[in-house]
Length: 204
Image 1 (spheres, rainbow, N blue to C red):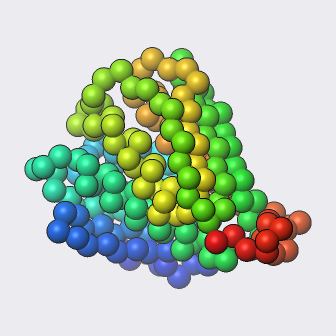
Image 2 (image 1 turned 90 degrees about the vertical axis):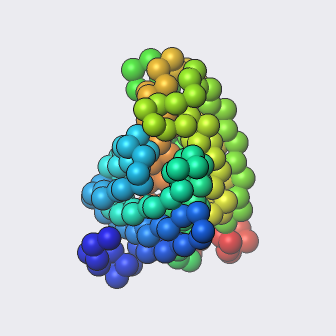
Image 3 (image 1 turned 180 degrees about the horizontal axis):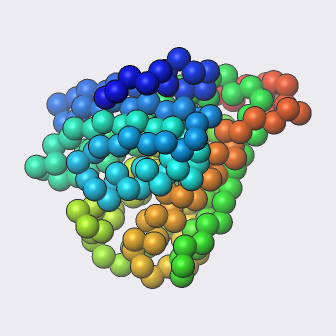
C-alpha cells in the first residue's frame, strides 16, 4: 500500500490486521474528497467500497489478501471489522460530531434506508432481500455480514432497510451508498456542539 500521509491527518486512521485467514491494511480519512484505492480480490466488493468512499467523501485505502480459495466470507467480514475499527479510531473523542445520520437513497427501482447513531454501543438491524446468491463473484449473503462487522467494530447503532428493489446490483449499491451518506452526516462537525451530543457527557 502506498503511504500517502492519511494517518497524519486529524480525523484519520490506519489499521493493520493479520490472521491465518486474512491480511488487511486499511486507511480512512473522514474529511477527504472521496478518493479510493481498493484491492480485495473481489471485483464487485472493490466497486462497493469505492462507491462508499466516493459518496461519503471519505479517502479510503484498502489492501486485502484473504483465503478466497475457501470462499469470500473471511475476506469481506474481516474488512468490515477493520473498517469499523478505523472509523472508530478516526472519530477520536467524538467531540463536536452530529452523532446521528440517515439517508433514504434511490437507485432506479430501488430505495434503501440507512440510519445510524455513533453512540459507542453496537446494534445492528438489517432487512434487505436479494434475489440471487451472487453478483459477479460476490456472495450477496456477505452484505449483511460486512455491515454487522462494521457496526460492532465501530460501536455504532446501524439500521439498514430495503424499501423497494428488484435488481440485486442496484440493491447492494444503494445499501453501500446510503451507509456512506448517513455516516458522512453523523461524523460531520456541528459548531453548536462544544463537547459530545449526549446527556451522559460521553459517547463510548
